[in-house]
Image 1 (cartoon, rainbow, N blue to C red):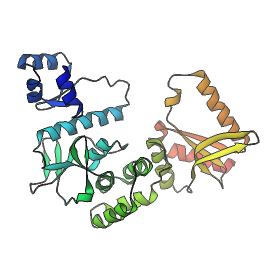
Image 2: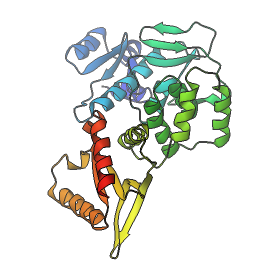
Image 3: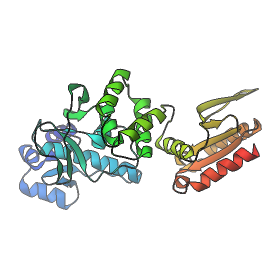
Image 4: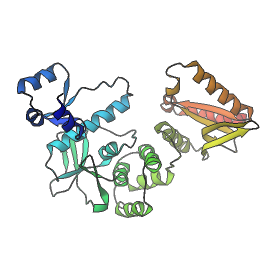
Length: 311
């Protein structure tokens, strides 16, 4: 890509139009050649981006990456000032982790009086947006993090809403006055009860999507509320900081994403075994839960109950 087009694309999420490529010096033949040989990929009609190697990304992260590029392509194509990016599409631009939500459609909210509905892979929402609901990302009009979260939470499951709520409270400054305002605005929205429940349950101490999902799972199955990120010491000093601790049951539950073991590093494995031995030496039960376990929820819940009984 020539420097002029590279600079232009960098300000548009890596996406550029055929007209922009032509204005930067590419002929019709050169554009077709780059698409044909795979150097460029078509994001949507008339919208392109350089091919990017994604093999190192998890499947879910690949979906987020592709959705982000489609958002920019859509906003390139729509009349400026007619819509704002909203719902999960806005959360993607804000960098909020998502789980369990669809990415097939780009979500926008109308800023004009035009109709809502689905058009060419874009879901157009109608609803009043206040100045306090609006911000910008890379020059694009976008609903604020908290407004976008309410938009998502009212149209998703409790688990999906909690995953993003934990991340919003953890990574983004949230004004209590703004939260109260949005609670009033969304009071009679369909799905608002789910949003309110998820917000009450949200906890910024949850450090990952996996931890948030596991916390919802334990809550759903009636386990007592654990302490999050609890720190243990012994006579020699620090032992560990754990994901979940059930004090009355003397049980630690850890979410293990397995990423730290992916390279098979022997020192890492030894450190982790030493850490777990230290916890057990304190008289604690330790239960590990993986991504695979979350797809078979009765199994990890049964192991946790077994640990409670042993303790």
